[in-house]
Length: 101
Image (cartoon, rainbow, N blue to C red; front, side):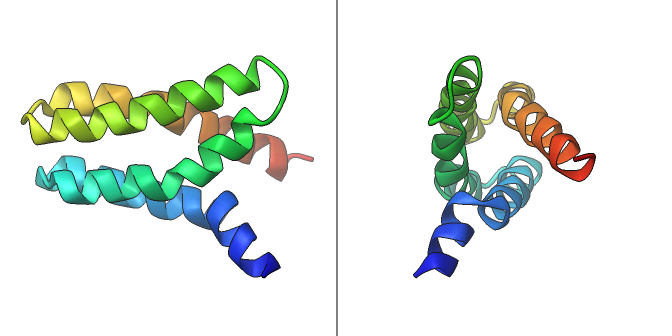
């Protein structure tokens, strides 16, 4: 049971979500982008459980992931790429913090 929580709320979900969102944007496949946003939801909500400012960053990244999937559906590749940036920055910052600890 603990392994399922780690996969959903931890780094595996964040990494798979990032790969699917990036692939969805590059191939213009809204289904892949939406799947990536759904998979990354657990990671974003886990970050949002922390005190501010991380709460707001997690919620912003969650919202932007789904808006990015909508932008892919509307063929707006530049907007979709821009909307993924908050999630990538949050992920990069946390990866740096974990690895330099």
